[in-house]
Image (cartoon, rainbow, N blue to C red):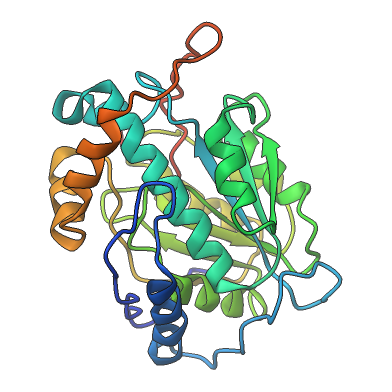
Length: 293
């Protein structure tokens, strides 16, 4: 069955950034939850889950795939603009925001899937802020294999939403709406404006959805739609959102968060810890929004 296209969601209001380790303030979290009530969608929206308890049969988990904020490893396309350390600091900010947004959505358990492993102290800091985030290393393999693992090992039988960290436009309201859609559909997608998608949700792991996809190309979204249809899955597709990958995206982000550039400059005044071992090889397909490199 081809995907349906509901009306665009209303993004949650943005609040000033407190610091790089805490991407959303308490006020922003509250606004994100309030914004979800007014978000428009073409079908009823269920109430968000009160707490991320996997025993709740209606709980929908959120799996976040994130890269460690290592200079030269994270956000490499922005290195010409920000430098290796600046790009790494931005990755740290984006990861913090994704974790905070997922917790604010409160649809179910949140798992932070870390690459190249879970040893970087930033991951422990983000996962430990609220005490409700399970930290796990991403397995080896391409993006499809890693997303499939996140779905297969999810603690929520009602389904899981898989996201990256590159879409600061993704709000708690969006996640709640996607979880509501997944409770009545087999799958849900939020495309990216520049290709690929920023969220995919499935009620169960379906290996064929991720098999043979040309990751890191503009064909990802179309191929994923084809595989979802071939698997006979009923798909609910939302309107696209933008992500941060190139200089124009960073300028767009700073326009919405004017404090961010200054925050990054402050962060760079305190150098980030270098990696303990050899620099991990870059993964060109580690984003969910998979535009050609």
